[in-house]
Length: 591
Image 1: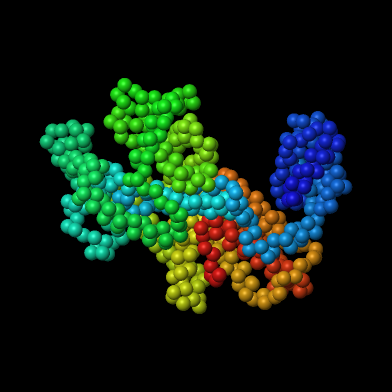
Image 2 (image 1 turned 45 degrees about the vertical axis):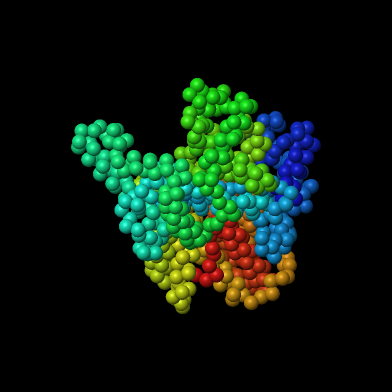
């Protein structure tokens, strides 16, 4: 039982014994630095149930805890806050239970529990991944790893949007202007090559619109009747009809894109257990439209279109099948969700990592799946996130003004190189070691900068700011980890013994921070928020640096002190490594 659980139970017993009140919850917070104490019990919420002066209520509960809880050695009351001092013995015992546990904070999944499927990335096959995809991938991957660490079985997946008019635009532009060039003949990654033709299509489309306007057409007419757009629409119809030549071109160009994506995912350090393709799934939902009509969940209009009326639920009417019988996005998403459960029967819930412009879509999707009677539909979660902005403004892929993911990864490594050279931190490294380290620092900076922010908030991404070796950044935390590794290399001690000694206040503060880690992982899992893990790690590192500056580790007066402080440093490093593991960030052994 944790300290908080023990104290909570005892506080409830005290309140029952002295005030004859059954308390449901007890609120805790960290004790403020200016007061003595290790954990604070907040009295104010109790005043709804207990009549009296908060100071006197605190005194009564404090005396009860000192008498009844072995590890409570003293207390003080400041207004409505009961600050409790915990014995050194409690923290020493806690430390001795975790100091050899390399997976401290992580829970092993129970094979009997239901799994969770986490969807992220889900790109279109007409362009390379960009900065927006980077936030999506980092968030989805990290949430999957955090859920795993919290004790869940997890499947990582994506749905690849490999069909539709936007895909045909790239195909048509390549056919018209490509002269048969390939990734091999140009030396370009396949996704970049195809993306260039998406931009080319837009350029030609705009030229044709201007030409039609000059000939007297309205802008709206020109947009609808530009020959290149009509050709792309015709190509899509041919694809849907299974035209051999169009399907072959589609397979060839998508193949180029998949090779390009695979390289980006590898460089970004994300992976997937299973893939779904929109070209397979877009018809999947249609059989459930029939089911929904039978059960009265859906209604058919006179023109033959099928709708779900959600007005009683505070939403609007949503189309699930067009009058010509074709599927819409909603139909496809209904079918895909159901197919995933068929493919993985142990899945009991899903997380969809998709930008916040799709909030309403997922509200509707989840509600429809509930109305169709699927038990697992209550365990669906939309991991909604804000856009990523750059100091220079908004990104538009069809105009070719996006920040390419590969370029960003390369830029982060070169920024890391520039800053490391300025600081002179890498003397004595070989060129290969330096390049590897620049990549670890650059990518760590990028991931941490994005993941430390609450997913719901927009981010203004500044590469230079993210690679600062001071403050709440990835490199600052990586540097602290590497510093601890240097201490461990110099120490040359037997670290197996259990040491029992009075604690320095800095040691105690560090142990209190370490004790929070398992709870942080559980909270981050339940809130789907890597930011909680990132900011916890920063607090742990700040606490360690304060300990490092105030307490001599290798120069301690007594051998037992030296052993204990090296053990403590080692556990801090292990916890940093575990925290960064779930964020998808590597830690360097030297820096």
